[in-house]
Amino acid sequence: MNLLLSSRAVYRVAGRDYRELIFFSFMAAALFFKFYFLEYEVSRLVVRVPLSVAASAAIVAMFVLFVSLFWRRGRFALALLLDFLLTALVITDILHMRYYSDLFTFHNLGLSTQVGEVSESVFALFSVKDLLYFIDIPLLFGYFRIFRRISVHPFFHRITLRRCFWTLLLFAAAVAVLSFHIRTYNKKVPGVLRSMWDRPAVCNNVGALTYHAVDSWNMLTDRAARPKLSASELEEVRDWFGENLARQRRPQGIFGVAKGRNLIVIQVESLQSFVIGLKVGGREVTPNLNAFAKEASLASNVYNQTGSGNSSDAEFLANAALYPAASGVAYTRFAGNHYEAFPKTLRDNGYRVFAMHGDRPGFWNRGHMYPALGFEKFISKKDYVNDESIGMGLSDKSFFRQSLEMLTQERQPFYSFMVTLTSHYPYNFPRLMEQADFDAGEYKGTVVGSYLAAIHYLDREFGVFIKGLKSSGLYDRSVIALYGDHNAIPRWDSPTLSKLLGTDFTKDYNWRYVQRVPLMINVPDVKRLVWNRKMALGLVNLPRSLALLLGIDFNSGLGTDIFDDSEAPVIFRNGSYVAGEIFVEPAKKSAVNVKSGEPKDYAAYAGMTEKVRKILDVSDKILEYDLMPELYRK
Image (cartoon, rainbow, N blue to C red; front, side, top):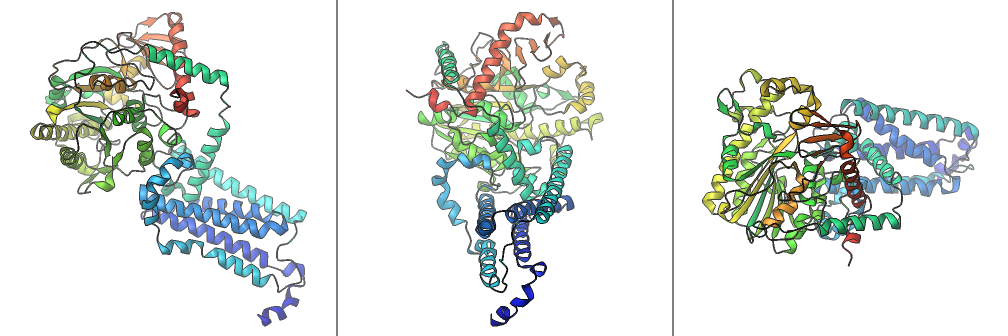
């Protein structure tokens, strides 16, 4: 120490005082490596792309450069505070990965009601070695305390015009690097940085710091774009909601026909209506689904209503009876909302309510969203024995087998919401193709051919599951509903699908019509459910329909039921809709018969178009302003 103090003369010349530069360089390096090592916690197979590393360094530089221009006497305190907060973010990410298999998102800051439920589990995952992430803070503190005394000059220098110029120039360069990285990745994978459908995958590709920068921007723009809800607007939503509830009814011969039964709902990945009954090379693609459709009631005119949330939007429609978010994804943006959803309603009526899916709990933010919807348990990949993985997670074979074992041990009545995974795009997973045992003939090697094989595999495992339900006695004690979540074939591969089905998909109305997904509902002792077969349907109609069968009033959400003969339109997120067989696009001011392509008078649908606009507006306000508590306030 005396040696250091005796060398003060070395630092008397202002131009040779490097203490502050060393301080901030060490701080920047420490922050960079904290997030660098975090990426290994996210994935041991992390991809180190040079541009991603450069973007991470740029973000660290932006933070440090900002602090370096702060008021000289408060610079040290701000530096340590920033270091502490960013380190806390790293630890939060690590604990989220260990508990949810997912990264933290700022959209989930509103999930305070869930903290108490998981706090003990999360803290149990904390390791003493995690404290090493904070080690640079006392080192920086010690460096400042010791080296501030070795010079007559202050440790932190005043801001000169020259220093300000170079700092701002470096800051601009850092912003340019980050912006270029984000633009490049957005072009490579359009929409993923907005939807954040798989946060660990995004982190793996763009870096942890870039992920958090984009996540912060998404949250801030969502908040900034939202104007304050006026009292008159709130009253307008209340009035509409009240009028909608007043129109609800209990159809004769339907209400309570399955009272006290279990409910098993199966959401099948990428299942579209055109494969039901389809034969390729004389062989049925879906023999077991075809057989189930004969036992159950089949609705073949159910349209895909999902937005950018794909599978999660289908789940949201089928459990909350609300429409997908106008921007972003409801599962990631509104997991902190309060819902009066279908699972909560069944739970309030004595049902054991749980979700089952062979993927990570953090995928699509399900680990947070399921409790918000009212599910009391989420059986995810970490709860299954991972004895066979195909594609994105647990194979459907293993998923159905293990789920059946769990269902036979559950207290009844229960509501089990099951989501399959193996038939996920791009469908050509090697192990899936080996096990599918389906010759797609001339379509082999195409997206369509791989899809047909994937669905044939799903069909076989579903057939085994149904046999298991029957042998266990659950089949006769349960309402079983099955539906497809969204479309399977991308538009760019429509020529192959056109060849398979003999339909011209260059015509928009044909493409819209093929976007139907099947819905099958089997009720014990009921041969056929009676509904208007000409009525177009959507998954938003499902919750109330199932509740009626169980003898329960589900008065939340915006969907009617499939037994309603009012021919309510099926509404899509972009404002277009199908009314009966007429596809209406307000943006193009067009109306066309979705089966024949015959043009219709658009002006004749002006009233319905306004009704559709209002429904979407109400749904958006309920989500944006978390209005369910207001609407249900006595």
